[in-house]
Image 1: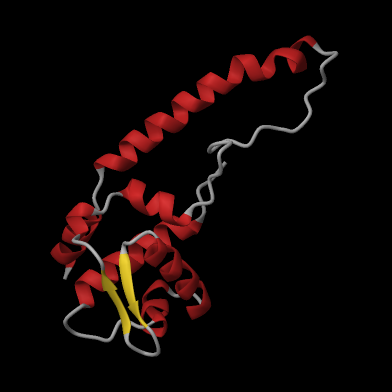
Image 2: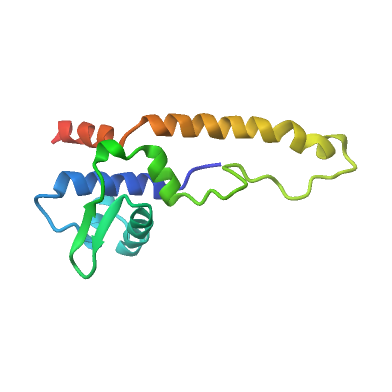
Length: 142
């Protein structure tokens, strides 16, 4: 199991918007140059961030802006914005364990609660880290 690169790209985008907000028009092409991916990927992630209320986008070549201060945006906010975790949760369970097998018959009852605890612990940690923490680190390198 691995969280997709959409998460780190989204964090990268938000930090870029903060760092370069007064210097450049923050278009998908500009952001794609920093992330080093196709602008189409940036536009998709920007639309997800916009739908979550984390960025504002001016259509055309207007660029992107933060919709709220970075110290009010957590890793969990970004994770929920760009990761496709459905109602089943972070871990996707294999579809049809064998009900005739003692392990297959009981795997859900043993594993489900444990996996939920893991997901809850991860989300708790994600909620403790703010995007401003990353931006401040980057600013120290400039």
